[in-house]
Image (cartoon, rainbow, N blue to C red; front, side, top):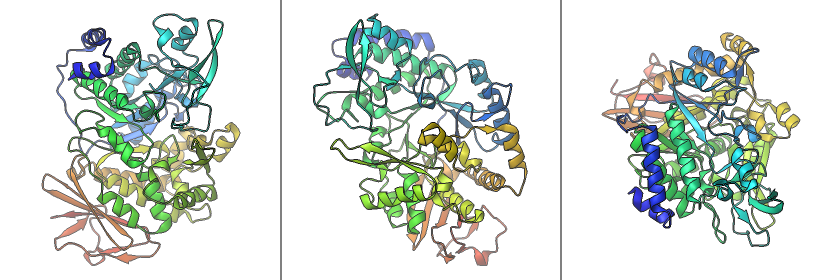
Length: 552
């Protein structure tokens, strides 16, 4: 299998690549571990290494102490967003893949964090910082780095290349006293690696194995869709990109059978799920990018027709699943709604983001026009107007979180979601970076005071969210690979989960009025409120939800 993959990617260097792979597998392990697999107890917290801080203490130390106290009984994994030395993009322009940013701590602090939690790392390997040693040596013409990056002719036609940002595709640099243009998909400071060079393939494989050796159970392949470039094509989702993921998975699983590869491809739904491959050869999990904007759209429309139709058409391989989320360090991407709702409806959602104190980021369509790419707004704020009462803000938000937790797959929870944060517009405007509206750094003592004060807004969100998680991780019907069915009754969206003889039905009212719904002819109880009067079992308050367990 691996020989075939390498033969397709690097037909003129098969023996060199296979030899290098053999050396790496020997370097990092012997593959004696046994694969454990995912369970219903898997739940991932998404956070920066310095999202929670305290004076005179390394942020990773603060994060560990806080996470041990506030999350360890409901969350078993922490995704530390890029924690390496970087030059821009809040960590996503990595200067050194092998070191921890000293401002955060060191590898020992990462190991300490891993004492009570599984770990998820970012592999930001489509590009690297222009301030990296690799790029500095490229500009000096030093081997093997002279071929690590893509030199391009600016006079060529690049109109077919898909552009995720409205910035130049090529940037000029001085290489050995001559001007060269280098491919930069995302920014001048993020220079793309040249995977047509087999030495890049090997070097990045070493990075991935290194992360696994440092305790990563999950590895997030950032911006992976853009990996392979070929002039005259869209340079996104190319066959070679899929082959590279397949090859990396094959080698990684041979050494670390528990490893989980997650692809991050913020693109329309059909393109996104292509990274499952056949369910056994590419991503173990794929980011469910359609879910966040579709849930927000359904809340604002008080209508679940589109949500239900989309869910009913979900077809996932048996051995793969979604990484479900609603909020992240980025904004809410709206490209995944293309083909599901109209352009006008996407514009409607963008208008809501702006009305609620957020921003809209645009993409270059390549024809002189731009369209919404991402909504930069705290997810809780995206769902409700600033003037709405707090209880309504909390209820709408928890409704969406309930749906996310009921969906088949593994849930990913952004730290600002569970901690009840809202827009940090001041930071976004001061920096000129719209995404910082949802990246506020929280002082640990102030945060703890708010969480421990029962009447605070943060506490109301945090304790309600904890309750959902406690129930979820105790019910095996929520197994990531369990079966799921979907239906609706008016504005009520239902998710039915099955695994090993157990069934749970999540019912969600997207209307601003109370509704009643019909139940199957079986005995059920609301496991979120087990003492609930059976007469009221089929009634949902505005934006209310219940998890009903069969046979209890």
